[in-house]
Amino acid sequence: MREDRRTLVLETRRIGIRLEILTDQIMAQKGLSAAQGHILLFILSRAREGTSLTEIHQEFGYSMASLSGILKRLRKSGYVRVEPCLEDNRRKLLFCTEQAVELEQFLAHAITATCDQAYQGFADGELAQLDRLQKKVMRNLSISADPQAKTRRSEHCEESPTTVEAV
Image (cartoon, rainbow, N blue to C red; front, side):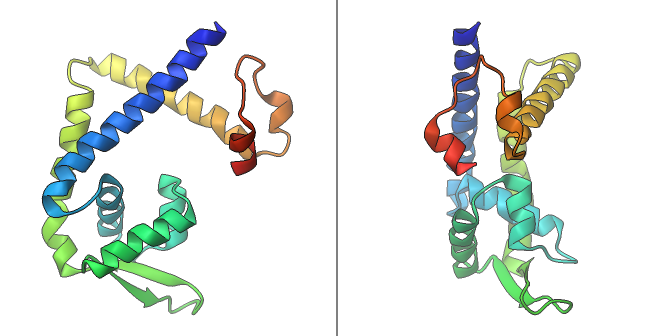
């Protein structure tokens, strides 16, 4: 069973990479990457109240350094503006610009098209089961943030030293 789990992890990684490539190809039409498109759509969904770097980090899991670079490019391209938070001067809020609003339908369509391609031919029950299983994997992986996680980790899954240090 150990090899089967490694294969599942590898295939899951490949699926994520392939989804990223497909979305990159569509987003390239507007000079954006998949990550930029997802983040911009997230900022657009919070157009009224704005959002913060921390909220985006919590939603997507990108490192703060990676997010800073992505947001810098989005600001340079005129899609995002930054304003100080009225309640806390140390905190900055991110808002979409009119230029970003003009892209909203394109972004939503691009992401929907990728999802539709990935899940074509799946029955509703299969999608529901896949959703439950993915959530279970995510819960298992979220244990790694817990200091006692090492004692609860499965003996069937090896961990690399760099992964443990990064978490």
